[in-house]
Length: 116
Image (cartoon, rainbow, N blue to C red; front, side, top):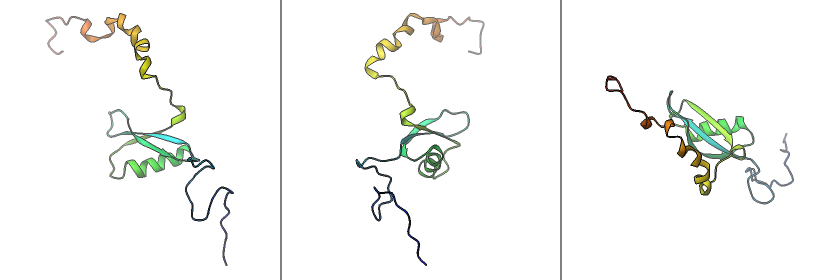
């Protein structure tokens, strides 16, 4: 008894990669963030293509934590990330320049404080 695997029209025999008709990946791009140890921040580890968040999480685990170097993973669809433009950094961060009290160096530490 044989069984024929149903295929989409754009799939070719022996081609198991998720490609669209224009040659690009049909799956969305996901950004992977790993936290190395508890108490540390997540850092960007790389990117991968996956059909959904659950598969992206499993793929990220297999690709980026093969040696057990992480305790937590985040996967975020790249299209959901909003980033600032580096060329507009001056106008974006300029309002903080007139607020020096937000920086710890603005304050004088009293001499009687020994533990700072």
